[in-house]
Length: 101
Image 1 (tube, rainbow, N blue to C red):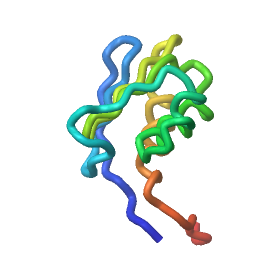
Image 2: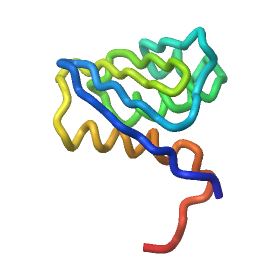
Image 3: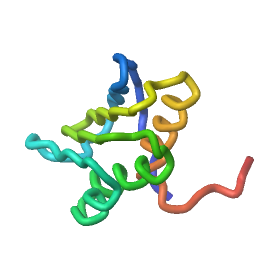
């Protein structure tokens, strides 16, 4: 149940920018510097940021602005790391995982 989100990404040094086909926040944007701050927000962008912080210990901050998510990582970004982060974003609206392979 739910739909996959289309995600395009570009890496600029320590920052990966993920552009999506869905809005995650309003026009003010939200910034998180830790999983605890993301958890405390109680918003959908906070839930996505919390999932990213939980999966990648090298993340320093997550900024969510409308349909764009910018993530700063202290160790930079490999192609595999960027694709894994895109996967979390892509699946963030999926409620039930499919049992099909």
